[in-house]
Length: 201
Image (cartoon, rainbow, N blue to C red; front, side):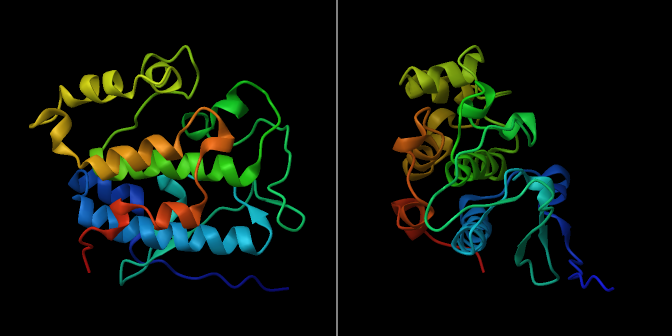
């Protein structure tokens, strides 16, 4: 028996953020588009990942993003997102429905984790510790007080809230909605105004 693996000479995408700091929005946009294109392909093939995080995204020598570590992945039938009950993955990237031990749709929870990854690429740190109502940062999001969330985070940024584009803030809020049914699809995310901005090449 043989296992054929692709060598990603660039290492983890997380290492780039940890070593060189957050990406500019054009650079983050470049990586996020590749990431979401890849995730859409995974979903179209009938699988959900369930453990997306920057440490599971690698880049090759041309900085193309590769999704790795499918140890928690699962197959879903047809167009159904699946109805899972197992609490698994990495705590900081779990959607609120997983934290609350509710049945969850794999595609929607993958998208939630992708939103957190996008935030980390642009800011250099996670948006909240856990996506639970008791978390002070996520509590603002869950209570539709995103203005407080951004104002609080903005205190550590050079230009406050305006350090990051309105499109970025709007897309992040959509991807991390408390109600999974209100989160956009991957294709809707890719059609968002934020992805129409300049992209690094």
